[in-house]
Amino acid sequence: MILGYCTNIHPGEAWDDHFKHLREQVPAVKAAVSPDKPLALGLRLANLASVDLMQPKRMSEFKAWLAETGCYIFTMNGFPYGGFHHERVKDDVHSPDWTTADRVDYTIRLFRLLTELLPTDETEGGISTSPLSYRLWWPTPAARQEAMQTATEAMLTVVDELIRLRQTTGKIMHLDVEPEPDGLLDNCADFVAWYTTVLRPAAQTYLAEKHGFTKQEVDGALYDHVQLCYDVCHVAVAYEEIDTVLASLATANIRVGKVQISSALQIDFTDDAAEKLAAIGAFNEPTYLHQVVARLTDGTLTHFADLPDALAAYDAATHREWRIHFHVPLFMERYGLLGSTQASVVEALHRQHTTPFTNHLEIETYTWGVLPPDLQAPISKSISREIAWVGGILKHN
Image (cartoon, rainbow, N blue to C red; front, side, top):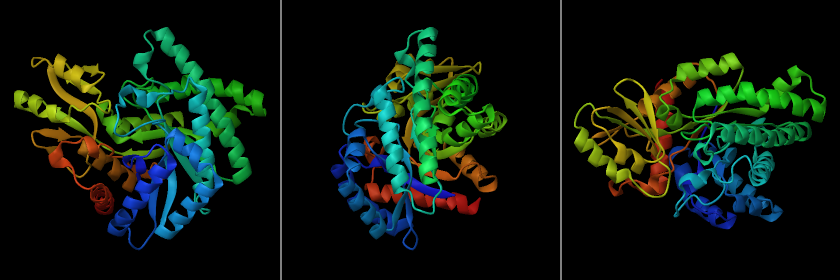
């Protein structure tokens, strides 16, 4: 099992800029949490940076720095394609989606980079990616179904590349699809349904024609090369339980490519509702999407596309609980009157410790720069504290 952290917290859309931030921040993190052994990093590259890093000189420099610093790359985050810092991201985080050639080209480029960056003794690597598209861009069920089919066919061209990479390098590379609230794949149940009723049938046709694969060979290729990215924050916001998710994956014969360790805001409105509603305002920031799923008094769930929508629609008579897609620090259980889904993180780590279900764990807290001022700290210190907290939970489970 490998535990690392995702470099999407470090800005820089061009490679030279991102590399500058890595050089400035990563050595301090390593010294704090892993002074005597290599530190694993989950590399996030914007499209522009990925093009830059394809240049042999830049790749050689980066490899030399990794060796000198005592770090290595074990996974990559291929969800955000473009800008992710100091600008409005919101639903643009899904753009370009899997209905476009740009998303395919970007993802294939990332896999070629990861194949070169993986340590020689590592046999597998994964790249997390978007949940096909953003659901709210497709106004009707028919439009969503058409987008899903188009995206699936595009994704199979990446699977074809991963089959080729395995044949030429011996590395098993997997695309780790990451459900997210209001994605075309909103939750893990959506992912399993898509995998079994859309992806597998499409793959049977595509890979049989492309490679002459039998049904068993197609299923084996998908098992190895298309897996789930289990983002703990997203699963909690969807009110899904880890036992249910893992059971459904086992039944469908689907692997977890990696766990993104992340925590969401949680608000219990059964007491102090007015004060808690006011406290949420400190987290209402303009950069990222903060989808809200409300659990009502009758047990049903209501979705809001972003935090301002939920604040405007709050109903004291029916809203019992909110879970908010806001990747808050892992090591804090409460934020004043507000809670978090830290318990879901502890439960996932406990399950991984007792019954491992993935080889890759990636800490993904990226909202440090937009947290309320009293929760902010130097980035290297914040990251080190996250890694130490997760390590402590794993050690004492």
